[in-house]
Amino acid sequence: MALGPLRPSPLVEQAADHLREQIADGSWPVGTRLPGETTLAKQLGVGRSTVREAVRALAGAGLLQARQGAGVFVIATEPAEDWAARLRRASLADVYEVRMMIEVRAAELAARRRTAADLAALDAALAARDAARGTEAFIDADIALHAAVVSAAHNPVLADLFAGFAPVLREGLLDLVRIVDVRDAEDDHGREAHAALVEAVRDRDPAAAGDAVQAELRRILRNVSETERS
Image (cartoon, rainbow, N blue to C red; front, side, top):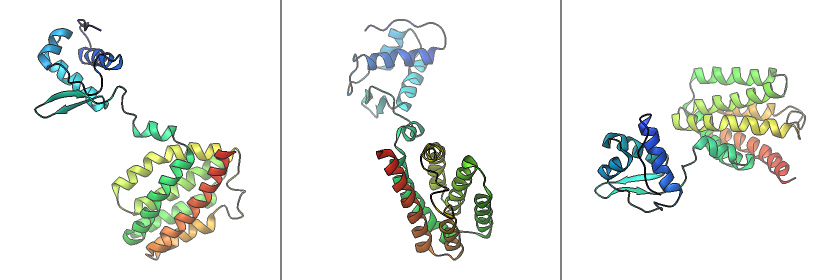
């Protein structure tokens, strides 16, 4: 497919679209080195700076890669899927398996690093979970308590990972309770397990904190897996 001149505006977006079409239709297969900036600028009828920005945009989308001294190469034919989209497409069981890995370690770190302010936040979150009425309010309060534990770990990367999981967890749990009422499935709605988690963090007991989270999430994962198999 021959490249054609572009309309005046917006040039960067149009240039990126034209280059993306070349990649998508197989004109530039994976591994192909793109023509130089000067050649592309002439073919597209734009300046080299516009080509440079378009290439940067496609590199950000995971289609192109600049290699020092070698040029720009095609590395994929479709844009890379972002983390949020990947999570939305994943099964809830898969999400819970990874959540368990993250939260067990976060609970252990929280028990070592928690502050007085963290304990106050945990106590408030546990009380809010106890007081929650209605399915959505209960799920929101439950996730908020787990978020408070992750926050007490004082690791911003862990906190960001959990924040990415939270919307997917919420929607998945709402779907789950349409089949299994997570509140009615146990006499105390998991209150004892969550109180034990808070106390383990308070007591600076990493092993107990990690065990409490793992037992709770493993129990829910069993319900999730059974539901997804049915």
